[in-house]
Length: 414
Ligand SMILES: [Zn+2]
Image 1 (cartoon, rainbow, N blue to C red):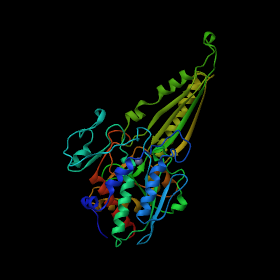
Image 2: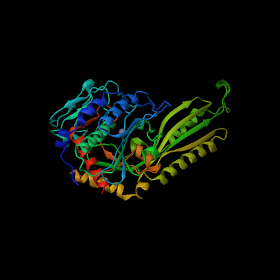
Image 3: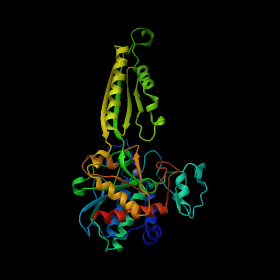
Image 4: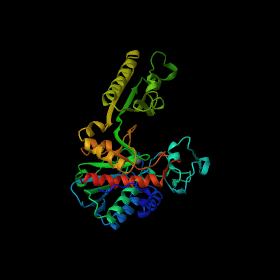
């Protein structure tokens, strides 16, 4: 086995940065209001490019299916089957159209100024101070960059380039998938799990160098429907029950200390995300989050108790709480397959990096895929400040992700 840990060699011998710059220029923003899969047809624009490039790299079974999943297989030089995936879409939160990537070579540690007064400063981004001498890549400040997750795609491609140049390296059969719609939580919804056929998989979709994620939130969604009594306001005294007024009371009773704006690290929350309706009937949508699934379920029960208290105060009011499961913390399932995280930790250490195990305050495609029976932790892709105009990535971080992947596939073939 050869330990890969020299980012300069990867930058010299692969086209990882060229690929990345090519991919980010293609608009692949997903859309949560669309019912189709992929949610936006423009994700096929990137999918088609990736199909051509995978064929060029000599992979087998290269295709994009009707739902926008790009699939390819690299036959193993050793035993086993391993999946590697990254997502093609960018976040609906910020424009990904007409991305103009900017290169800042030989970065000196000062603040990076972009258009529209957008500044990326080392004060807000301590990772920048670890990136002196690197080439920093940003957008021009008017769009997001798309390192989330086109860095991950470029890194998997660069790993495939290196494996082609080094047939002596032992690796399992590699199943590659570039999927749509991760940013709207639907990446796994049409995932061709059976065809993919990997018992274990990794998403290359994490943050800065060394990060690895084997834990995510457990997540539920809640819809609270308030039905009041509608009466002409001129003659409403003692008769009207205003649904909006009572919804306001519920919002006021949610524990502020358990809101996203007041929590961090391993604390969970209630988060009202939207309202619709009128005085007669209205609906409140919330998301509930916690790392501990039991605590998450308790949060749902407390919401129901609050609703019952409102109905006790106003017997003519009806409040219904509906809770739907969204995804679950992958840690529990991964604990049954300790080698999956151990191999990743080893691969990062072999790259000369100290692994940083971070619990994700959100979900990944891996949360759902793990629940679907394919353990799928997350590997760093190198980017920082996802989903906004201050997103950036360094060339060295990307190269170190490629090193980690090369180490990982060798470990998996052992
Ligand atoms: Zn991502």
